[in-house]
Length: 105
Image (tube, rainbow, N blue to C red; front, top):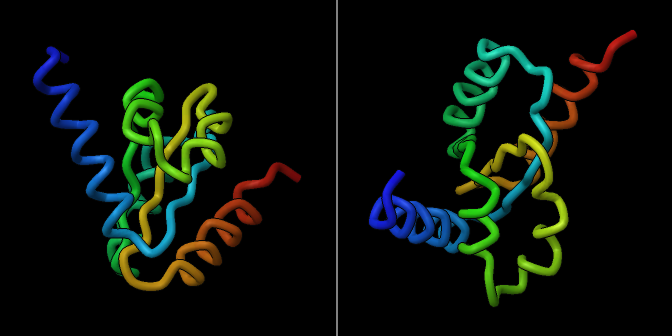
């Protein structure tokens, strides 16, 4: 990824944050690609979006914002961002239900 692409990605992240009603992050380590894709489809139905960015680019996008102090420590390891554009509560419930279903017995 060259510098121009990185700058465009940072701007994209900032726009998604500004547009969203809620922003959630979660560690996706160990999830299969079909699980991630299933979540993407679910969030799309709920007027949301799941994206995976390089952590350094998200940290750069959050620089100077209120979310920086809340989220920047969460960006360790493989982290996915979920943006809720309509109903943050529904998005949160979807994440909680998914976590319950995926928890090893």
